[in-house]
Amino acid sequence: MAVFKGTGGIMSEALKERNLSDLVNVPDGFRDEVLKRFFQAAEVAQLDPPARDAYEQSLKYYRDMKNVIDTAVDEGKETLRKELKLVLKEERRQKEDALRQKEDALRQKEEAFRQKEEALKRLQNLKRKLKSPV
Image (tube, rainbow, N blue to C red; front, side, top):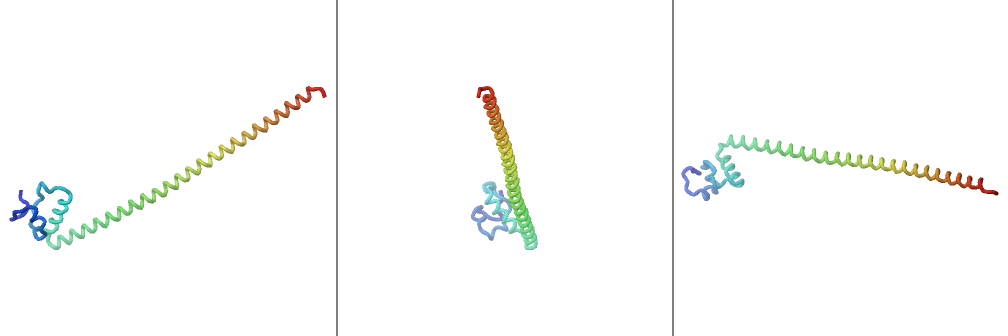
């Protein structure tokens, strides 16, 4: 398992910045995310200046586009939240209006029923008066 060209100590040599250009591959024991990033930096360090500039420009463009997309997604989520809130508020208002209309209709029917009861009582009283000798 060759890690560096012409070096002996794996970890001590890997941690020295001047040896990044000697990096050949990632050792099996160093496969976690932090060390992967370290070895990716070593690969970039091996690039010649024009290739490194092109890589950095490409990386900058990628990060810019990712930020644009992330911002658009965040703004879209916020817009969706606001629209959903308005829709729910409108639905609640419509349900409250429908409930008020039903309550009003029920009150009108109750009032009509009371009026009919009163009219029936008046008729019954009138009937009793007509039947009883005066």
